[in-house]
Length: 196
Image 1 (spheres, helix red, strand yellow):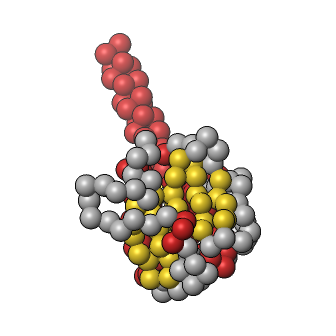
Image 2 (tube, rainbow, N blue to C red; image 1 turned 180 degrees about the horizontal axis):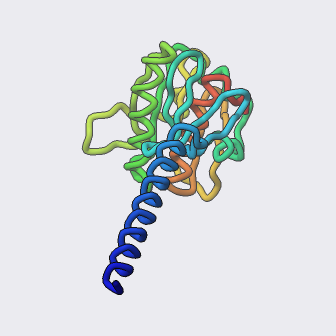
């Protein structure tokens, strides 16, 4: 009789455990269908920016764009308002200081702009460096800038900022991360999402 009661108790415990597991599974499925989206999102000027494993994305003017940072993370970079018409030029020279400590990141930003601007903004981009190197690149500095062919010069500085000298956009950064923030800000300025 004692064994019979023990057996009933074990059966009852098994049923309770089984029912508990089923409840957890059903709740998980319902949570997946009706739960909130945990993807970090931010709105900026009416545009939704979503974070994913690769970075931040947004659909702007019916095109999907990828960024490294949310706009709120780049808007604080001091920027001269005169940059906007220069970025809209049909031709843009992009150069960087190859002697800078962050020259690899500068080269990545240069490449990114050289791929994105022709494809999305119909801008011809010509690449160069500000000093001779072992690679065959034309030497381009702010001295080459004209109103019809502005220069975007990437360089390092103690202060991260985007300034304009004549027809030359000087984007200076204190570190690699700030260079990537500058790249995002340049694209947001060109898209008109930001105006400065």
